[in-house]
Amino acid sequence: MTLSFDLPDEASMMRDAVREFAEKEIAPIAGDLDEKEEFSPTLTKKMGDLGLLGVYLPEEYGGSDLSYLAYIVAVEELARVDGSQAATIAAHNSLGIGPIYYFGSKEQKERYLPQLTTGDKLWGFGLTEPEAGSDAGASKTKAVKEGDVWVINGSKNFITNGSSPASLGVTVQTITGSRPDGKKEYTCFLVDRGTEGFESQEMHRKMMWRASITSELFFTDCRIPESQMLGKRGEGFHQMLDTLDKGRLSIAAMGLGCAVGAYEQALEYAQQRKAFGRKISTFQANAFKLADMATEIEAARNLLYKATWLYDQGRSEYKKYAAMSKLYCSEVANRVVNHAVQLHGGYGLMKEYPVERFYRDQKLLEIGEGTSEIQRLVISRYIGCYK
Image (cartoon, rainbow, N blue to C red; front, side, top):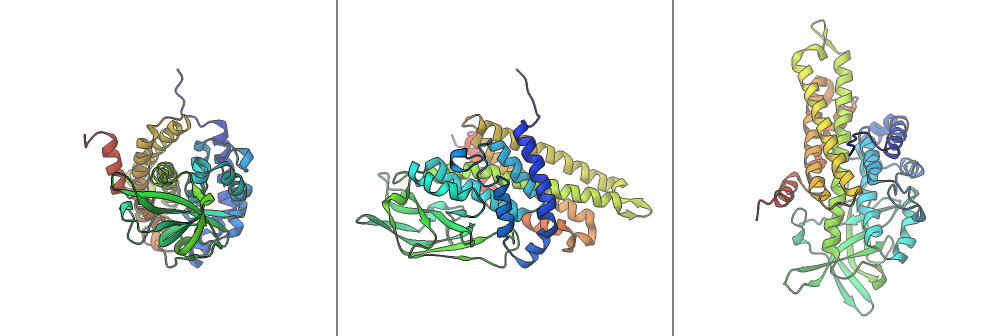
């Protein structure tokens, strides 16, 4: 048996291609887009041309037909340069097209997926509500059947890609009744943009990911045909959990990429900046910070790649490692960006240096796709704490 830590060729080629693209196309304008809080359809289209929207989808749906590891590496490389562009790709792949591909009917896949791999159109996943984040059971958005249609009323917020000019629509989780055990019955529906009764608006004044689209969604007597139901009635909760399991891998990749980018900036700055006649990288206090950063990044990468490899192998235990990866990578990013800003000194607080943006972008990684507290709860259940 051979144990290899080398990336497969397809993932290695993806890394090279995305790194070159991110450094050439994204890096020069990332700061300006962040400052203006401006989403870039041009960059999104270019990322579509590169095959980043639908990395793991089969070619019959317009995808690149690559492994999930190749997709995770792509997200990591984007986040190494800019969290906003990484967020657009991660949310579209994991939360947008993922549920349609894994749970949609043949007709739904053929209708939507080819449009969602080109970079011209995006898709969102409506789960979080104003009063339902970690407590998903507090959801209030409902769908009531009236004849041959379902009527949706409610709202969602913090939905990535939900109100972009390129948005084709969203998957929305609703309450459709009660289960035999008395718990809420959840069902998901595919809602096209432009459907009467469905409105979306962009959320502004964000601290982080300012060049990605974050949205509020509103449903007022929004009438949806039965054919727009995702899977079967009552399967929405399972679909949500499965989507979040996979999504944790992409958020972990964003954490890893964020940490790598901040570390590289800090190392370069420390090797150039001088104090007391010496490069500041040669002071032991700073050298130890950089050594800790490099070590934690290596540990985070190995944990994330293992979790993704388990998923690619079809092994269900990937879910535990996905939660571990999301928790660890996001918190490693926290520690790394904090050290990186400290090493930059006062310059780390100025927008002229990308590390300031990395410092802001990192925080959401400990909140989105399940907070660090929720990840610890999930992990503790997997390891048997509540038996």
